[in-house]
Image 1 (cartoon, rainbow, N blue to C red):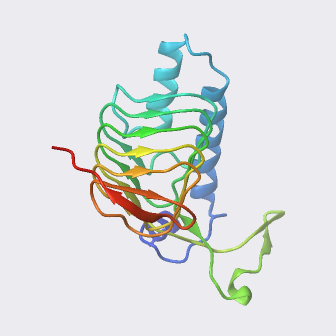
Image 2: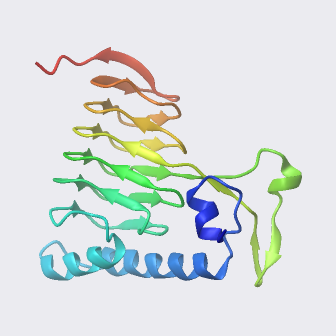
Length: 194
């Protein structure tokens, strides 16, 4: 099993594996290239996004700056919008549904590290301090609105129709058609979408 296969299947993996380093470097360069474009450079942005996010729809709209760790592990539905400073550590899959709106400074983290410090402590590889890590898939359903400066942690599933309040840290799965807010994010109320 390759380190990439381990990574996307929540098995301890070596992030300094040459294939993973190459994929990350490509995504980091494309993220920087996209971030350096202007709002009116539609064609240039579209071409960069096709390379960075091959599983995104043609109508994906993201304001720069952006940061993706791999890009190839992010799947974006129709009519997606993300505002400034969108960060996605997509070591595992990040699956985003249709009609999702994301405010500025939102971070999605699939990566996490062992709890035991003896397993977590770094080691030198290729002149860089690193450690082995895990990654858990994150799923964001359809018709979700995520407020500014929200952080979504590994393994979380945000159900259809949810609103996540600004500044929240989402640590657990949510129920559909509900408002969550806080650190950790908690259910505040249900939304009647009829």
